[in-house]
Image (cartoon, rainbow, N blue to C red; front, side):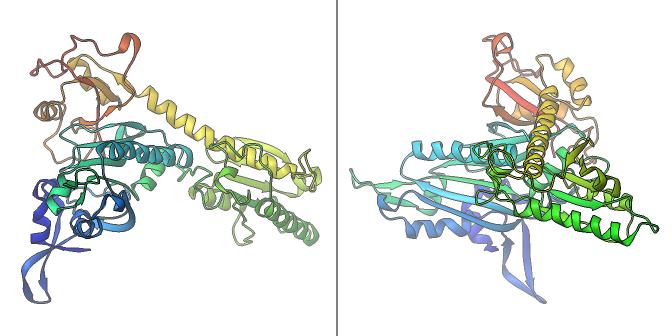
Length: 469
């Protein structure tokens, strides 16, 4: 957690990127420290001296380490819970390889893992790409990223990054091995990668609405909540007891059913998330000191994907009402005892799992539609401001030079710099150079110039720009 100033300064180029955000300990009680101690902004200084001891031979490679820990970045302006916080928990990985090819391959493989988490678990679409020279990880050779989009604010947010560090840090910390053929001292190729608790904030911002959280079924701690309703002071005790018994029975059927799921090999299947058994995370709300309406609002606020309502009339009809949190759609589902389908599965449980799968898919489809509708190709500088005001992200022809990037941000800024970071008056920054470039009639032409009017250089690629958290 603590790093000495001298150790931190070993990686000057790298740490310069974090310098404004490093928190320093300068006192022990009332006594000034002889040397300030930094609260760790990142872990290279702590880990790589150990790499130098552990790696001696090519047989020690590849070395792959992952850790969960917290780091501190002292964001002085406008911290936001989960999105930009002064301390955050993250997963960070640090790998070392004998060759560049191995390292670059794993950079992209790991970025694919992050994309999988966002797409198949959080139901959040992302744009994969490479950071510009200005935005790449300081001290590394290149950075790849997953960028998400929040439609309500029109801002992008960095979801996860995977970096190829080359041999830069290996030279700093003397991490080398003896080459098996030449027997020469050879520096390792390194990568680092990380994903933080920001993922929670991204999911909340992408799916949430004015009534509270909207959680994808695969991430929800409670996937189904069962609420008895239609009970009043005049309702007979026998009816109340029967209603409670039915609610508990439905809950137990959902929680304890070992279902053979037809979608077991489908990444979009909620059941696929529980490989040992397809248990649905269900619960009941049998509290008698709150009205059904209060309970409905309570569980909507918490984002539970599916609510099952059972009342006396539903018992008479041997049915229950399912209400989707994402769309508000209501459906009638048969209770039918424990009737089985042709595979021997409980039909009611099969229907609920199908519904949860559909919710997961629909939430992703909705977010993907919003993303695609709000990423526009813009070739004219005069149109940039209007697109940004309309909360869109821009794919623009860009030369890639850092000073040109600064000019784009400067000339799309509408305030004096005191507004919240990423607010509607802030300038556009580069997000990434997408791996998937526009094709066909929209592809970059050989004579396309960088979009900024002061540049005049040939554009190297379409680069994604936008306001960002």
